[in-house]
Image (tube, rainbow, N blue to C red; front, side, top):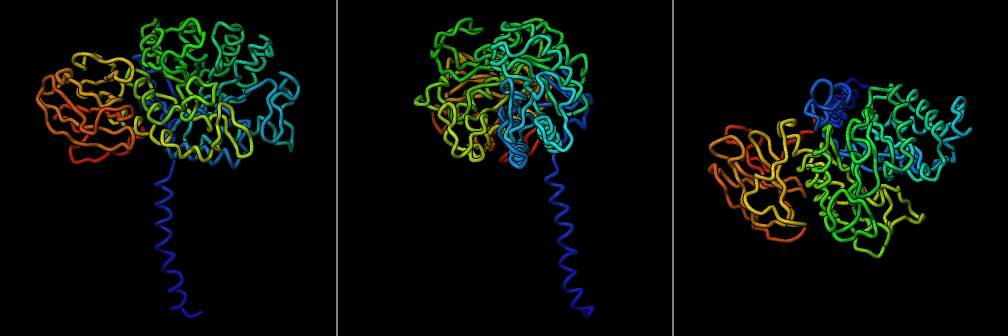
Length: 485
């Protein structure tokens, strides 16, 4: 081959190689545990890493991931979660007792005797669980490990001795895995078989004290009711659930008032008012495209604007993050297989649902500002905060404030609640993350009206910042990525 011909072939490749490298760098996952393990911040309301980096929990409920997705499907699902800004995926390690996965492999091959659980040449149930954890690790995602769902425990399929053996197995197998959060319970009240949950939790903690632990309770209940003083419980979780206002359906012992079922911010307030103070999160709010009330597929479905409302209400009330859910994704609904709760869309198509793709805007907003000083502050709203869908909710730091307005109702905001003689003000869209600069305002109670109208789902966040601070610049039309980096 002539030298000139060879150069014509190789020169274009020399320009392509750097472009490939740049693309790889751009898509390189953010690995949060490079900042050290997760711990509870000294203020007892938020999570952070050992080096002080804040951690905003943006969770996704992939409950059936370990049992219904194969390796390729798990890889695709976790990659999509990463791209959409999720940093936690909550799963059921065992959804039943015994549990079986998509490969036809059983979790308990010899009851709760795990001595010979790993067989050479066999890709067993726990090998698949290992694969999921390692895949999530590569992508910078924590796995919230619900060790066993509550229903088989309620049915008596796990004894205290079984819980001890299972806890020893889990603790020893995964204590070095960096991307784990342990979750006891699983849609069950804490006063049902509490001896099982305490044994499982304390056994794991005796082996692995490097990972945080919580309890996932029944709908419309919160872990703090039963376990707030338990040494093993690092943070509280509540399940605001899938009911609409007034849809009580014979439940008893609500921690919040009747006809406030959708007000998940009330659970945050209740939990944070307890002693000792522990961080709290809504670990299961209403899912996108699930029937209101859950069980009747003919009911109205919860939509993207509903899941946004649950997210902003709970976080602005003081939660350290939020978990999103989707009817098709949580059960990994597949083509040709009937779905529970009226689900028809396969899980991989539901990944395109609008609510799932809007959650990252909340995470980005909160991480734009000083993290640990943020508090809920209803007094920012001058006058009536409103009830139900008209409820306004405010959170602030020392020099910034945020007000979530679900209906687009007129509101009076007390700009004196933060520092600064003048304030820069914006509207922020939870739908697409866009910013609209409203101008510079005097330091006083000010009336704000969203000219786009008053209606459910026309939600906006009002942002006000001391003009001496530059967290956001007036010329910006959206926020730069603040994904904890």
